[in-house]
Image (cartoon, rainbow, N blue to C red; front, side):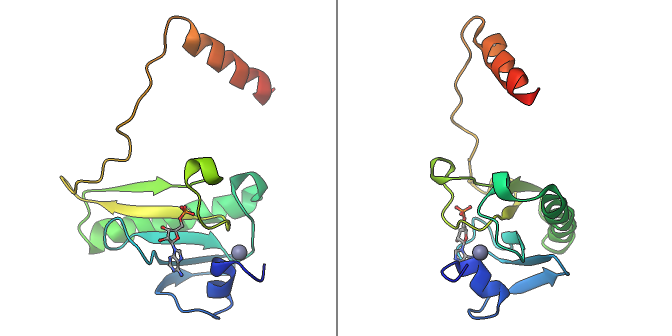
Length: 137
Ligand code: AMP
Ligand code: ZN
């Protein structure tokens, strides 16, 4: 994809602070980190989002995300880590090249991504679960 910023990073047309790579995957620091060490794990091939990323590539992304999470924990003495993937505009995706965020977390670092919750009313959970289960068949 010619106009994709992450494809340009893979092709070394624009710089990135690379921390790991293998045959399938590249991992580099997010240019605008939530915490220092915030890393993006991408497939070297272009897929726009999770729906279009083959399982094999997703598995490779996850394997590397775990490696990075362990390295962040040990090297940066992180207290925790968030692994996140935004898919489509509604979920806040800005770069339409599949990627996992590996975000080091520190006790009381002030980042609160999971605050807003919507409680189910009576039977709503059952009805939502039923719809999802039907679609899984
Ligand atoms: P998302 O909202 O999941 O699509 O996030 C895209 C992420 O890519 C953001 O966190 C950006 O800060 C990051 N980003 C965009 N351009 C670059 C770049 N050239 N190098 C490193 N990270 C980038
Ligand atoms: Zn791309």
